[in-house]
Length: 144
Image (cartoon, rainbow, N blue to C red; front, side, top):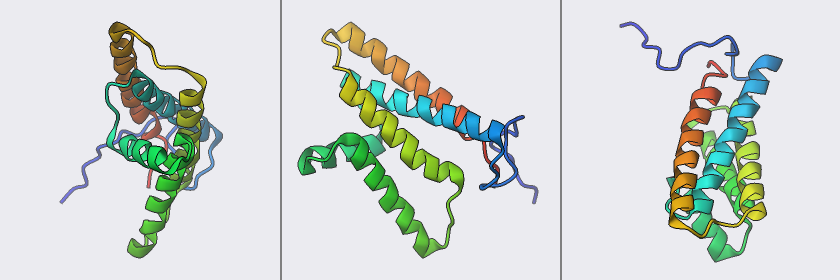
């Protein structure tokens, strides 16, 4: 049975989860920043969020912890659960925890939600576009 490649190999794709190729890391960080920005757009639009972010929002509101920090904590807890299945994270996973939580938290704190429904709808569309684009960028950075 042949292996089906789902994620394409790009010029910036690293050879392993811990390959610290500067081009790969730069593209990875850029993709994660875009992803965090897209998530922040969705939250600021206040018309819906991704499941991971909804969990962070709910716990943030209940525990009084800033959203970015709560996102980081939940990501860390998920990562700790990998110990039981003996999966080792790569640099992309660790940077994902830090950069997305930082971008999400800082953008949501820095900007107010738009007031008009049209602006909120446009921000939602932008957020969905950014999350999709960012996923396409950062998922191609590291090959396992």
